[in-house]
Structure formats: structure tokens, C-alpha cells
Length: 261
Image (cartoon, rainbow, N blue to C red):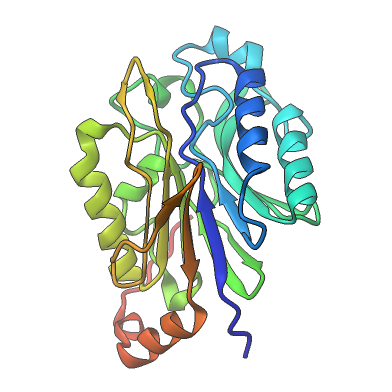
């Protein structure tokens, strides 16, 4: 059995609103300093632009899969031999999506369009929700899934049926005003799904609030395991420990299964 550990790093980027080039530059400079044995770098939600509140603004910067953002991410993944995950603003057929991505060093990519759009903001009115379940990617001996921000509030959507995933990535723009909910939802989802949860929030501020100090990595028992070094929050996801925990405490066998989509 493959018992390889996985080293994860969150970059809590202070996103420059609407300024792709500046955000590309900041991310490139930061990733150049990532520890060399890192396997996966997770960026915040909409890391190139942050949230844009109207369709005219979106039309100027939204991209297809072949666009500038994923090309940039592919180049970093290949150069530093790390997987890269996060989300960006995608435009497809006149619709706009909050598109999550997981890009491997080989260039292979997996995408996920955010399903639950935040109804307390314009996101719900001007963006389209995804129509597919969160994907599961096999990477370096780990099954890794991906949701985006507000999806975290919906437990059925995150359900880890028959331990389909070992780690869930959650790129987010989640403000300090809802910090208590963020922390406890990450812990609760990790506990109920017996999986690591990587909450990659942005930092800085925008018109919607403050964001500093919110990124966190929790283990399969809901315990924080990350350490801040330099630009990143790092954690080692321990293969033998999660496997032993699941074998010792088999709540996952008793979980209800749901058929969605």
C-alpha cells in the first residue's frame, strides 16, 4: 500500500481587486519561495481578480480554459513540480462561473464550477452555478476533492461517501465577520467526513470585509495542523495516521448515502 505523506501549502494571498497582472506577479514571487518538498499549493478563491460585482466588469476579465490564468498555473506547476489549486473567473457561452481548478505538474487539469452561489451578494444573480459534483483527483497516492467557499456550508454536498476522498480543498474569500462559522464548519466537515480539510482563504480586505488570519488546515479529527513559514501555511498530511484512524473508528461505514445530480 502507498503510504506516502503529502505536503500542502496554502498561500493566503492579499488579492489586488481586478488586477490580474499584479496578482500573477505576487503569486509567482511567492511560489518561487515554496519549500522544495511541497506537493500541493492552494490559492484562494478568485485569486486573479477577487469578486467583481457586475457583468460588464466580468466580461472584461473572464477566461476560457485556454486562457491566461490556467496557462500561468500550468507553468508554475511544471516549474516547481507541485500541483496548484484555487479558483478563477471563467466565461463560457455568455455565462460566468467561479471555476475551481486542480492542475498537476504534468499539465493534467481538473475543474469544478462552484455549485452554491452566495445569495447574500450579487454572485447569486450574475454568475451561473455548476452542474457537477465535486471531483476527486488521484495525486501522489491521495484522493483529493475540491469545493469553493460557500459550498462548505452544505454537508450533503461535501459528503464523503465510502471515503471517496482523503483531503478536501476549500479556496475561499471568507471574511472575518463569519470567522466562527468558517472555523467550525471546516472542523465539522473534517470530523464527519474523516478527511483533511484545507481552508485556503484570502488575506487583506475589500468592500466586503477583512480576511486576514483565516486560512487553516485541519486533520480528520478536526484539529488544526498547519504551521506558518514565510509566505505559506504548511502541513504534512499523514497517510498512515489517517488510515489508522479510519480503521479504528469506522463511522464512515454507517453514513447515509445520497444521490445528488
